[in-house]
Amino acid sequence: MAQFILLYANGPAERPPEPTQEEMERAIAEYVAWAGKLRASSQMVGGARLTSVWRDPGRVCNGVGEKFLATDGPLAETKEVIGGYHIVEAADYDEAARLCADHPHLQRGRIFIRQLA
Image (cartoon, rainbow, N blue to C red; front, side, top):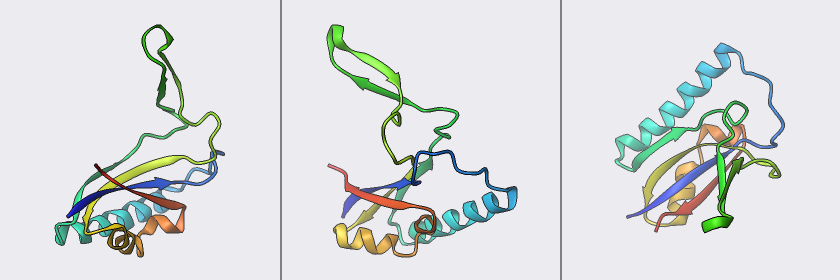
């Protein structure tokens, strides 16, 4: 089986409204249920929610040697915010995509799938 990373893109990089506590709890429960289904079938390798890009934009590293530069980012010019990821095991891209068919994130944004080397 190959391993694939599912990257959760949250849409425009404009700050969305803060969810209510009830909305957040419901969303977390949906993600946990989806991941639990894959854990039960031994297809879930791992994953995590990333810190809020609004509080912690991360860093972008470019260049080497004296040209090395680490800047705030990576979202200064992009239109997407990556909010989290899971790593799953699947036979191929088609199976990895089928695993995403009922993913709750699709109600909020898009999922990018990339095979790990």
